[in-house]
Amino acid sequence: MGTVFSFDIRGAGVPLTALEEAIRWLHRMDAMFSTYRADSEISRMDRGEIAPSDCSPEVREVLGLAAEAGERSSNYFSTSINGRLDPSGMVKGWAIEKVSIFLRNAGSTVHALNGGGDIQFVGLPAPARPWTIGVASPFQPRTLATTVSGPTTGADFAVATSSTAERRLHVVDPFTGRPATTLASITLTGERLTVVDAYATAALAMGEAARDWIEQLPGIEAFAVTADGRSWHTCQFPLHRPSQEPAPRANPASVGQCEENRRHESGLRDCAAGPRP
Amino acid sequence: MRRVILTIAATITGLVLLLGFKTHPIAQAVPDPTSSAVSPPAASPSIPSPSAASPSATAPTAAAPAGGVQTFIGTAVNTRYGPVQVQVTVTGSKITGVTALQVPSESGRDQQINSYAVPQLTQEVLAAQSAQVDMVSGGTYTSEGYLASLQSALDQAGIH
Image (cartoon, rainbow over all chains, first blue to last red; front, side, top):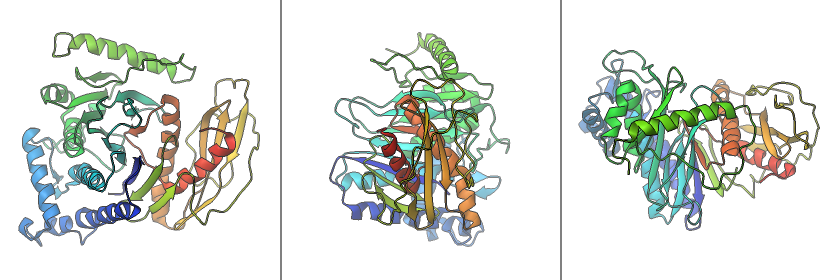
């Protein structure tokens, strides 16, 4: 998958051996799922050498989850990419969520696990302070498109972004076989990363229709940047609203940021009749 | 990085598997006290080329505040894939540029990883600082050697 994972583990209680075991497990999953390795179970299944029943329980679990995500996204989530078996859109979020559960069982109460920009959060990073997450701009390096706040309750929280700018992941509209291009990026929030990450991939393929789809999914919210530079979000997307923000510092991005804020405002007006409290 | 108590980075392809603690960089770290080469504001900010062999100062296009522009070079941190060394440019008390001076480049695969990881790391550092965020969603990559060298540069700059 060629993805870099970073673990931000706060507080005490996780033995180093548990971290090492988690990383060994990630490498095992890579060997099992990689579409770049001819000897991975996925590659062998793609060539018809083995059947799903011959596979590891992990592969069967992921394929089952992928089938479910397909059903729930009108098949915009698909493991068939240009005729090849490719469950990569499901594996990363699933693997991070698994590691998060493993670390929690090993004693971790506060952590953020980041796999290539898709993140599972557990706990609160500081007393009474929720996680703050920047959403990378798909157009401008070094700038954020918006900022998200995690739940103040410390409940589990997941954020995933799918972007046409990602170098190694080309999201394809499964119905046309062409790259999805109407959205430059879409960021989903929810509780568990497996679903949030898979739905982010489906939503990018879906394009503008993703807004209505996500709006009716309980517990999942979306923020999108369109290919022509607009942005929108679903009604309860947890935008970060700093309460004691210091005076904004002058920087080249500030003009763009104001523009973004205005768009957020208009987005909120659209939502006024919706379920927003 | 801010409040990163323990960072582990691994590529799932098995090429980068590193462990490190913020306050205790890797044991084989090579001290490199070089620091404080003051450079004039010159080039416009750009994502540095990972293969940059010599320090190239980055500077903001905006007029520098009273603090001026300073460059700090981090300790070269030996990882099992080779040395990693970064340089930060600080304007006043704000990081305005991050340049990778040394990254592993022996294999083609190293170069391939560096071509996307280093620009993304640079972006992450700058974005995270500007918005005071814990993490960035979308195109985020971290590597321990980079972070360890970055931390030593930030320590020299007095930025935490």
